Length: 308
Image (cartoon, rainbow, N blue to C red; front, side, top):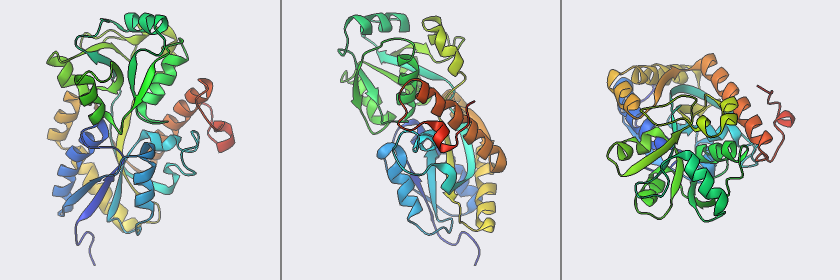
């Protein structure tokens, strides 16, 4: 029986409209063409991605249920979220990395720079409402980076992903957010939101680097969230090969590249040993960053995660 002979499910770890969701929905569209079957997308947010990962792990390892994954899963054990990470899965393809990460505020916010935000946060502790998205999420990690360099006492407001957080930011329900470029860049260009800084050591689209204010951030860079497709490790090799070929072709599609680059995201299109090595390196960098910032629940060394 040839694979696939019916629709394939793609279970995405975050809610609709967020960075992971948009990146993987666009990706799935082109993978469908290569697979010849429909990819049914299911959003299962919660538990920093653990709910979606558990759902996939409970399905047969036959390639018909894929995990639309992102980077927090590599931190599950370090943060005490779950007793597994990506080692139970095979990366079919890591499509892209959002290595431009912004700090954004509503357009009428009193700050016009990251420096002004930090100064205000330190004089009014707990008064500024900031988007948070669960331990190990990108906003959580970037907040830990910033908190390791300054007091930065903000009032965290949790959301199930970037989509609801952007709506809350636009509606004035929160004041500021650390977020990948994708979900917010069009709002910044349209003047609905303003970008106070970019997590980089040089400007991006005229947005000043956060390292101008906190030079100590330099040691964490480059850093960013990434998006990929995974299957359970026990999936037959022939099925993995077919999925890998389809998703590799999808990530090579010029239309997908244009869409992602417009959102400040760079195409990776890696699989196999290259993808495994990429995940290990990202895990090492971020797990030890969180450990050094006092945000890890378990010492990475105890989990066999080497220091970068």
